[in-house]
Length: 122
Image 1 (cartoon, one colour):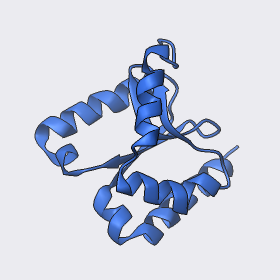
Image 2 (tube, one colour; image 1 turned 30 degrees about the horizontal axis):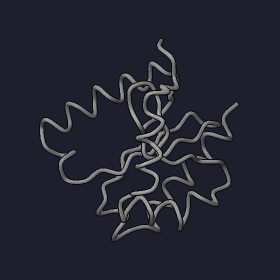
Image 3 (spheres, rainbow, N blue to C red; image 1 turned 120 degrees about the vertical axis):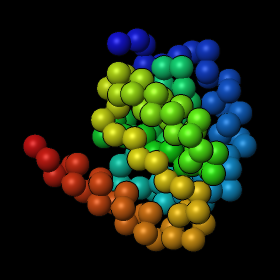
Image 4 (tube, one colour; image 1 turned 90 degrees about the vertical axis):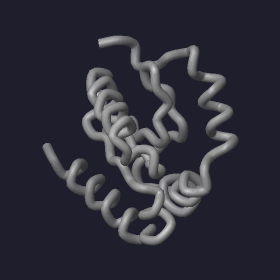
């Protein structure tokens, strides 16, 4: 297991926080920013910067554009998820941008259910 925090990604993470996608802004400002558990935006973990990270639940939430559903994107995401798990991440929830744009209430319900289910486990 490598170091979870990679100092080299700090500046890039800052830039990404300043330039979030429309979908990232929507999920952040309309839900995650005031969620019952704390989330961080554009968090460096190992060699990656994840969209959203909840330290309490060791949960990563990634918002995916269409490139993530091509063979190359799927392979990369699978490799990335495997590496994130090596840093102690317990789950990576991948949400298509379309779901943020057209079904935000459903996305929020899904995340809430995950949080409630995880917090209720001994």
